[in-house]
Length: 426
Image 1 (tube, rainbow, N blue to C red):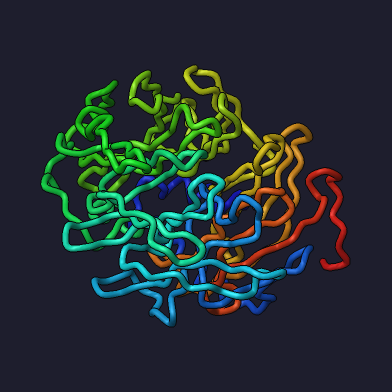
Image 2 (spheres, rainbow, N blue to C red):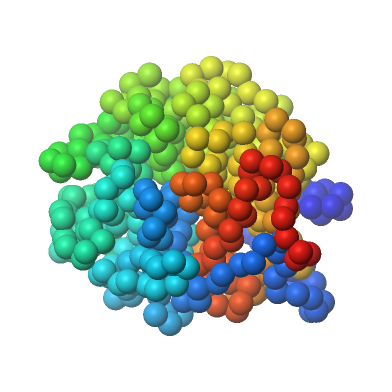
């Protein structure tokens, strides 16, 4: 954002309806300006008709030979409805160009897909679906064999592939459209802070589910004034690299439709809860290592920025204050906490930027931009949500710059080790 845009944003950011109208009108005007749909420093492979989902998961198998994906088979660019389905499978082959459909699911959204993810280093993967009982999770292997069913939809799997965290996707759909499912039910959908559900943990081999805490428990833990009369829900769970702790977001919606958020962490048994020192807003999160978390959020002194937090303490520091002026979706490559990949929301020209950042050198490298069509907005927007492969030399992201939602990859070679872009493209 430039200075004027930043001023307007901070003026309207607390009123979602006005903010969205101003943004849409502004971008519609600038969309009339012609320009390239894509510009990248390395070649981009776009697989039209496919997407993965969120930035907090790795779509590659342990050896990087398979790339998980959803195929939406011409489904219209609208919010999912009952009866809609997407295929679930993976790309394979030397150039990851061949898609192998395994099955399909009716539980998905455009932001996070079906929570498709691998189970540790095995050839098995898990995703959400629905049956007559409500939301569930299914496990398949790369041969196409059904390997199990869990009794609830899952959000995050630990690195070993043994445990999964869950929350209510039905409540999420009510209060945060675009991230929940049209299937399932919430027995306390009208309650401010339900006591019947919250975050649970499932032992994947046995299917045993244990409730860790309810929404009401978290709403009662160090409550804030803005929580009075609000509707509360929990979302965005993410295990630490060791799997010993996890972070999650506690959100509450006021009558004026403004959403407040705070970030918490705890042990896998739900104990030793920690509230990170933020103020009103936390959007996107990533573990840097077992002791540090990166989040785009509002600091206690009212600054929106990427902030690095030390878990279970009040220590924090702002990251890239001269390089970032807006939100994004960060992820660290495995075993290399000195770098992270992130993106931006579409700017005035509807360009989403793909960005590498070196923490030690405070160095931003723009890998390219991708111009998103106007119709991709709100719950059906197509954020890049960049993700690393295990070797740290390929980036996967979703984009609609071709005119159709696509699963894209970019091979960046040895850029992480050298810091030098080796490409003739501009």
